[in-house]
Structures are given as C-alpha cells and as structure tokens.
Length: 151
Image 1 (cartoon, one colour):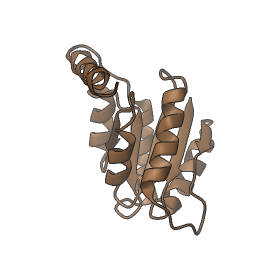
Image 2 (image 1 turned 135 degrees about the horizontal axis):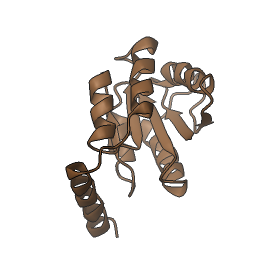
Image 3 (image 1 turned 30 degrees about the vertical axis):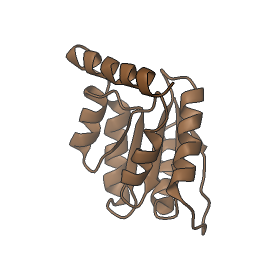
C-alpha cells in the first residue's frame, strides 16, 4: 500500500515520526512536503497530496496529512473529488472513519497528538476495513454529491 504524507510546519515533526513508523512496517511512503524549517500554508500541501491520491490507485492508496489540528488539512483535501478526509484524535474515531466512512485520507494534528497517540491512530486506521452494507449506501451518496457538484 502506498501512503502519501504531507504537512505544514505545525505538523512536520509528527509527519517525520509517522513516516519512520510506516517505513518500519514496510509501507511505500511518499512525502509530498513540506520540508524542515519551512513556514508554509497547509492548503498547498493538502492539495499536492490529495491530487496524488486521486491520480493513484484508489483501491490501494491512502494519504495521511498533518497540520496543527488536522482540521485545516481535512477541509482542503475534501475539495478534491474522490477524497474522503477526516481528522481523527482517537483510535475510536480512526476506526469508525474506516468502518463507516471508507476514509482514504487521515488528518492528524501535530499540536494535539503525541507521536505514540498518532502511531496508535494510524495503526488502527490502516488495519480497519470498510464494513460496506448500509455504510456503502451512504458513501455512494457522497460520491453522487461529488458528481453533482464537482463537474
């Protein structure tokens, strides 16, 4: 599985921690920026990662984005058709984002999570499968909204 990572300056430290965590577990990690010491706008890096996600293998690729809270990255990434980005602050929210929403983009806050908390969230998010069933009907409605409004 390819994991696309991106951050702004507030999420950079946590991104580097998670990149090591993922690489150590054999994931193909692609870093879409930013670099150390840069002061950047999260929107630019969310867009870069989201664009790579939608150009890739939608059944296999995922993205994890980092900013101060995870909220800004989610707002920007969700502007891309096919991206279902969600900020998660707990293992439970990460699990539900996969089981019920088939989220393909996780956003995390470098100012609100420790590396250990983020690793636990990422592990559950990557291990959890989409349940389908009644949840598929809802995700399909999201896709139809995208088709209607992202022409």
